Amino acid sequence: MTEVTRTPNYTDEMVNAMVADYVDSPNTDTVAKLASEFNKSTRSIVAKLVREGVYVAKPRVTKTGAPVVRKSELVAQIQGYLGVEVPTLEKASKADLEMVLSGIEDKMAG
Image (tube, rainbow, N blue to C red):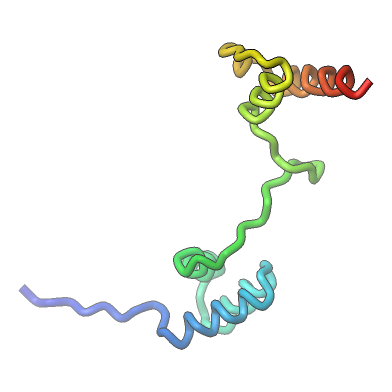
Protein backbone atom coordinates (compact mmCIF):
# COMPACT_ATOMS: atom_id res chain seq x y z
CA MET A 1 0.00 0.00 0.00
CA THR A 2 1.27 3.48 -0.87
CA GLU A 3 1.84 5.83 2.03
CA VAL A 4 0.22 9.22 1.53
CA THR A 5 1.89 12.22 3.07
CA ARG A 6 -0.32 15.18 3.81
CA THR A 7 0.73 18.75 3.43
CA PRO A 8 -0.42 20.86 6.37
CA ASN A 9 -2.91 23.62 5.61
CA TYR A 10 -0.94 26.08 7.70
CA THR A 11 2.79 26.40 8.29
CA ASP A 12 4.11 27.27 11.73
CA GLU A 13 4.93 30.76 10.46
CA MET A 14 1.36 31.23 9.22
CA VAL A 15 -0.07 30.05 12.54
CA ASN A 16 2.24 32.34 14.54
CA ALA A 17 1.30 35.32 12.35
CA MET A 18 -2.42 34.52 12.59
CA VAL A 19 -2.33 34.17 16.36
CA ALA A 20 -0.31 37.37 16.81
CA ASP A 21 -2.62 39.39 14.55
CA TYR A 22 -5.78 38.00 16.14
CA VAL A 23 -4.57 38.49 19.72
CA ASP A 24 -3.73 42.13 18.89
CA SER A 25 -7.20 42.72 17.44
CA PRO A 26 -9.71 39.92 18.16
CA ASN A 27 -12.60 40.75 15.80
CA THR A 28 -14.28 39.64 12.59
CA ASP A 29 -12.38 42.21 10.54
CA THR A 30 -9.09 40.60 11.57
CA VAL A 31 -10.44 37.15 10.65
CA ALA A 32 -11.53 38.45 7.23
CA LYS A 33 -8.11 40.07 6.69
CA LEU A 34 -6.33 36.83 7.62
CA ALA A 35 -8.59 34.80 5.31
CA SER A 36 -7.76 37.11 2.43
CA GLU A 37 -4.06 37.20 3.27
CA PHE A 38 -3.71 33.39 3.45
CA ASN A 39 -6.26 32.62 0.71
CA LYS A 40 -8.40 30.58 3.13
CA SER A 41 -12.06 30.73 4.13
CA THR A 42 -13.04 32.62 7.27
CA ARG A 43 -14.36 29.33 8.70
CA SER A 44 -10.93 27.77 8.22
CA ILE A 45 -9.24 30.70 9.96
CA VAL A 46 -11.72 30.59 12.85
CA ALA A 47 -11.27 26.81 13.19
CA LYS A 48 -7.50 27.19 13.35
CA LEU A 49 -7.74 30.01 15.91
CA VAL A 50 -10.08 27.84 18.00
CA ARG A 51 -7.58 24.96 17.85
CA GLU A 52 -4.86 27.37 18.94
CA GLY A 53 -7.03 28.40 21.91
CA VAL A 54 -7.18 32.10 21.10
CA TYR A 55 -10.51 32.58 19.31
CA VAL A 56 -13.11 34.58 21.23
CA ALA A 57 -16.66 33.94 20.03
CA LYS A 58 -19.05 36.86 19.83
CA PRO A 59 -21.68 36.75 22.57
CA ARG A 60 -25.01 35.52 21.29
CA VAL A 61 -27.75 38.15 21.23
CA THR A 62 -31.42 38.27 20.35
CA LYS A 63 -32.88 40.24 17.44
CA THR A 64 -33.23 43.22 19.76
CA GLY A 65 -29.57 43.03 20.79
CA ALA A 66 -30.23 41.69 24.30
CA PRO A 67 -28.06 38.80 25.51
CA VAL A 68 -29.55 35.32 25.07
CA VAL A 69 -30.84 33.92 28.37
CA ARG A 70 -31.68 30.23 28.60
CA LYS A 71 -34.85 29.01 30.25
CA SER A 72 -32.73 26.95 32.66
CA GLU A 73 -31.02 30.15 33.83
CA LEU A 74 -34.39 31.82 34.45
CA VAL A 75 -35.61 28.76 36.35
CA ALA A 76 -32.45 28.74 38.49
CA GLN A 77 -32.91 32.43 39.35
CA ILE A 78 -36.58 31.96 40.26
CA GLN A 79 -35.83 28.89 42.39
CA GLY A 80 -33.00 30.81 44.07
CA TYR A 81 -35.34 33.64 45.02
CA LEU A 82 -38.03 31.26 46.24
CA GLY A 83 -35.66 28.91 48.03
CA VAL A 84 -37.47 25.85 46.68
CA GLU A 85 -36.95 23.54 43.73
CA VAL A 86 -39.84 23.30 41.28
CA PRO A 87 -38.96 20.53 38.77
CA THR A 88 -41.81 21.31 36.36
CA LEU A 89 -41.00 25.02 36.16
CA GLU A 90 -38.88 24.48 33.03
CA LYS A 91 -42.01 23.41 31.17
CA ALA A 92 -43.37 26.95 31.38
CA SER A 93 -42.82 29.22 28.39
CA LYS A 94 -39.84 31.53 28.40
CA ALA A 95 -42.14 34.57 28.33
CA ASP A 96 -43.96 33.30 31.44
CA LEU A 97 -40.69 32.62 33.24
CA GLU A 98 -39.45 36.13 32.42
CA MET A 99 -42.71 37.59 33.74
CA VAL A 100 -42.50 35.58 36.99
CA LEU A 101 -38.87 36.55 37.50
CA SER A 102 -39.66 40.20 36.84
CA GLY A 103 -42.52 40.06 39.35
CA ILE A 104 -40.29 38.47 42.00
CA GLU A 105 -37.54 41.03 41.42
CA ASP A 106 -40.08 43.89 41.66
CA LYS A 107 -41.41 42.52 44.97
CA MET A 108 -37.88 42.09 46.33
CA ALA A 109 -36.92 45.65 45.35
CA GLY A 110 -40.07 47.27 46.71
